[in-house]
Length: 318
Image (tube, rainbow, N blue to C red; front, top):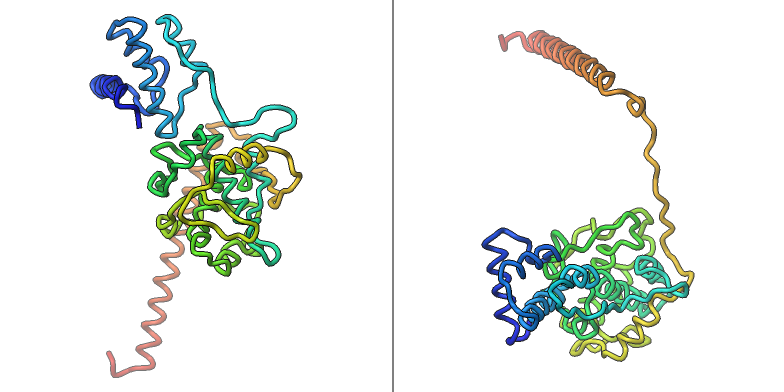
């Protein structure tokens, strides 16, 4: 939540956006500049206005592009902090999507700790890489922040990628599917839910629907011990989060799903011009009409034959 001292600046911006039908969450740098121009003020006031809008977006999981914002409001001499992100960048790290792909997702062996931790970590990657949450905000995440259909976090869409193994939406639903079972310590149900035989490389978990049991979870980011047990009464510590985030983008070479993009099969319509396609569709429509008419004739003949046979078998019925 925006600090009380900044709330009035956010409310002023919110009211202006509503009055002029401007985007407020998420807003744009251009919209914010128009707002500042509409209400001329000094550098201190403009700085507080921009800070209020920036912090509100950060709180709802839709952080503004600080580089773009800094360029846009530079003419107002407004100070915008440097970009802060938990995403690691460099040759020694994989991308967030690749980091999700290398997390364990299915159960193997007798222990469930690896799949629980892998699914939790993939969910964590979405929180800091896509939503831009800080360590403090991550620990405050609860089930009420998520809506399943469409899948959103505090009103921000969770995108569906082409590859199920690195899909942000799948990373969220995979974890929500087991978070309540994890809190209950129901390892047998986790083994069944994460059964390797029930997963296919080209199937998106986010397409499979989502039960509401996850809403009962006390925390969505529990600490997981070596045996897969969790303390359901507290979130993972900031120190542990820092350690996980520091390692989660290191390449491991592990990948369960070997997804390959399927190329569309060529058809006779691919190289057609529009006029040729229209002619082909008209021919198809005529053929369909002829087929339907012929089907109606056959059904009528069948009904007539049936009636005659019924009359022969039951002469008194007439």
